[in-house]
Structure formats: C-alpha cells, structure tokens
Length: 474
Ligand code: DUC
Ligand code: ZN
Ligand code: ZN
Picture 1: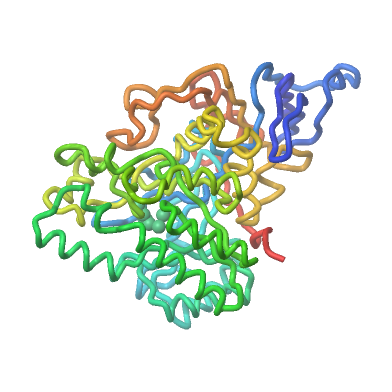
Picture 2: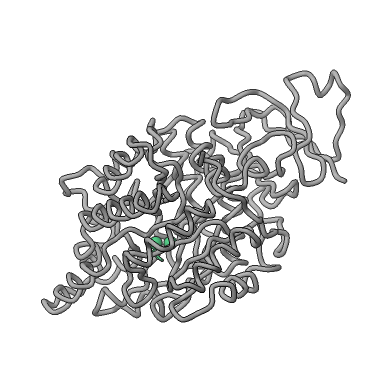
C-alpha cells in the first residue's frame, strides 16, 4: 500500500497544536513523529508532502447537507457527485446528508432511495441521517431498525412546513420516546410552522410578496418558542437526546443554554449564514435578488433586539453550540428560485455553502471569535463524536482514516462565481467574501483529492460510513 508522509506541518486538534510529522499507510494514519524522528528512524514513504508553515487538520465534517433534496417543486441543484466534489474543494472529507421519508412513504424504502442516489457518485465519504415526515407505528419500528442495522442513528423532525415534513407535538413525543429507548438522536428543525403559515398568508394578502417578507414572517420568537417546546418534549420523553439544527437566533440559543445548564441531553449547531449575514444585506436587496438568501430559519435582522451574530459566536465559544454545519441546499436563481417570483412563499428554501464552511469559520479565528483549536473542534472533531464516527473520523491519530486538510494561513481565498466556486449553482451566496487562509491540499482516506488548485479525486471514491450512537451521552 502507498505510504505518504506529511512533514514540517503544525497538526491541530481540539486540545492543541504541535509540529509533528504524519505517516499514512494506504487509507489510514499509522504513526506520528516529533521533529527529527522521521530522519532518526529512517522512515520512508512513496510521497512526501512538505507542510512547512501550514496547518494540518482533520478533514472537515459537514453533518447537514441536502444534495438533490426534492423541495418546493424542484430538486436541490447539487447532486451527490457535484456537491461532494465542491465539499472536497472546501476541505470537507465527510458529509452527512438526509434521506427523506414523506408522509405515506416507507422509511426503509426511502433510505434505500438515498443510497441509490449517492452510491458510486461521491468524491468523499458520506453518511445519512433520516428525515421522518410521517411518524406512525411503522416509522417508529423503522427508526429502531435503522439504528440497530443500518448505521443511521439520527432522525430529523420538522416543527415547520405543515403539510410537507411537519410533525405535531404528539408525533414528536412518540419519536423522542423511541429515540430515548434506542439511544438515537432526534434532530429538530425548530420553528413554529403553524403560526408561520398564518403570518405568511396575512403578508401575501397585504401584497407583501418580496423575498424579505420570508424573514419577517418567520420571527425569531417562533424559533425560540419551538426550541423551548422541543426541549420540554425531550424532557417528558426521559431526557431523550435532542440536537437542534441550524440555530439562527438568540431566542433559541437562550433556551438551549438553559437546558444544558440544567444537565439535559440537548445539543445544537449553527451555520455560517447565521454568523455573518443580515436580512438587510441579503434578503432585502432590491427586486428579486434577495431570493438567493431565502432559507429557513431565515437570516435575521441587524436591528432585532438581540445581537444574534455576537450571541451565536459566543455560543460557539461556550459550547452551547457544539457544531457548525451548512444546511447546504442550493437552488439556482434560473428556473428554481424564480418559482417564487411574485410570491416569496414559493421560493425554494435553501442556499449553498458546503464549499465555504471551513473558510468562513477560519475567518472567525482570524477575527478573534474562536481559537484555532475550537475551529477544528466545531468543524471536524465534534461532528464525528456527535454522530458516532469518532475516532475513525474527526482527528489525526494513529488508526484514524487519513482524512486530512493542509491549510495555508498565508494565502487568501476570494469567494465568488468567477473566483472560488465549485458548487452547481448559478450564483454565490458568499459573492465577494475574501477569506484569510486557503485549503491547499485535501486527502480523503489517504488519497489526494485536491492539490495545486485542482481536483484530482474521483467520483465513487467516497464510501458510505455506518455510524454509531452519539458519543456525548452517558
Ligand atoms: N431549510 C432550508 O432552508 N432548506 C431545506 C430544508 C430546511 O430546513
Ligand atoms: Zn431544517
Ligand atoms: Zn436542513
């Protein structure tokens, strides 16, 4: 098997940084050497990568992507092929995507459908969560089956989107009771969709149809309320593991922090759009341009009583928010977002970001919001532990998969449709952002997939990862 040595780099983990050389044999990290030991011990390799002046970090893990998601009468524009390749360009070596069961469909069949979409297509490794859009006796049995047999141990429910993915409180409680019983994690989209639909109907009736009304009709109070309700239901279900996805607002974070202070099994993620973007600079752009940023929960206003950005960064530092994912769910403006011309509620919800999460969060390090170690922890290591993939994924250590990113802190990355942009979307939500630092080289299970500003990977290299239970539960 081919041996690769990465020399002279600074290896970063959640607990520190160290000058250390890394030896890979085939797909696996097999040894790590203090400076001078490679020469002293006569270690040789087929390929030597010099990482002098660079950070050597575990491959990024994005635990929230929606490749090809059917939504709003169309499908997310990245396939597993294009989306996983864009992820590799962004220093991501594992994605966890969502298989979708809608009301009336069979859960196990729907997982099979998602396997068929992804198999043989991916540039990097992939795993699945399961969306359960119709909780009934059969679906509850399937949750148990998937957890025990299929390496799918987390289930997303929606308190939003009535008539599409929505579960009522009784269904949520039953799913949480099952999850608590089998040790699985419930991932919750926490927005009060019933109340939101009333506000949306009233806005449309008043002629308020522009994209910005998407955010005005989904107030942060209704994210806070749903988050509170989800937390209480998980408590009633015996402290069932609960992971709040895509937290966008201080209102929700306050509920999560209180639950965690009380010792509950409550965890949370946020996404770069909620750390950087404001309603005024995105959705409220003139005409229909704001449609590019229609996602749910929405990007929040800079004029809210809460300072959402500052609170979310703080939540990341205090671990009330454990993970940064992207909710990557891209739609082109042409023919897709355009479905909502004249009616914001028909704009497919979602934006693309799988390529830029590592970059945008590294900018948080440069800006003094996070330490280098916390960057690695929130983007690489905790995702692996939260979703049962550690220590195979999420860390550079002997025995781990050789999923490794070499990061150049001395170069900049310009994001934009004519700059760095490899996702299958006709625009970039991050157009014009200039980031300090750059993904230089990416290895997926020992194979170089990005080097010298080129994709050198292969469709089908990525393998399905069977996951265990969350490693944060006692
Ligand atoms: N939010 C989005 O913006 N898109 C897809 C699903 C979701 O919850
Ligand atoms: Zn969601
Ligand atoms: Zn999502």
